[in-house]
Amino acid sequence: MSTLLFAVKHNGYAQLGPPPADDRDKFEARAKHVGYLKGFSHILFSPDGTMFAVRGADIYCGPPPSDPKEDWLEVKAKCVGKADWNQFRLLFFHPDGMLYAITKEEKLFKGPPPDDIHVSWLSSVATKLGNGRWDFLRVFFDPQGMMYAVTKDGQLLKRRPPSNADDDWLKSRKVIGLCAWGPLTYFMGISKDGNLWCVSDYGGEIYCAPPPKNVNVNWIGEAQGCGRAYQQYEILAFTEDKSTS
Image (cartoon, rainbow, N blue to C red):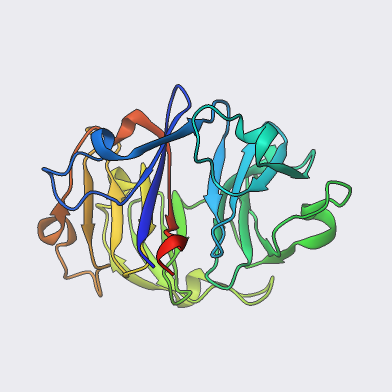
């Protein structure tokens, strides 16, 4: 299965296509226009390709849009949660299909993705994990389930996700990047092939390379530059091309 990049501009214009191969590969020009998704704060994909999208305090799921003439909410989406979903700052999936969420109060939770509007995911389904504050700029998983996080002072960390509410994730994490990662957090994600992708906050430059193994790696110096102006997209997310599976 090949990786696809799902991108939504600030006006809701949504595109889908393979991520750029280099700085000559113009994603905006070649990616398919698949719909309009205005007003969503989070869009993410489960490992099976289902799209989850938060609008206001509600969360919806369904197949990703494919026709710009269709209203995704009316044609393909189903509301699977109400009232709680504006409380989350970060939402991301583990490769095993579990949904992880960090609240605006900097607490980490995980649970199966929501499927019932009458059940509060936060209070009735999710389990709290890890002690301390989860005030990281970005948190995400690689395909093997390793958790990565960028601290407020720009360090890149990794460790297996916490197993319970008393697990001190920071105490035994490994530092693999020092101080320079903060400006690369406009978007961060690891594609199916194991490459780390980052978009810079300022010029919107997008970079790709394997994640650093330790602090001695000059990741930005070794990374492939794959274009610029990706800050024109309000939301970026990876999914997989299920048609090739």
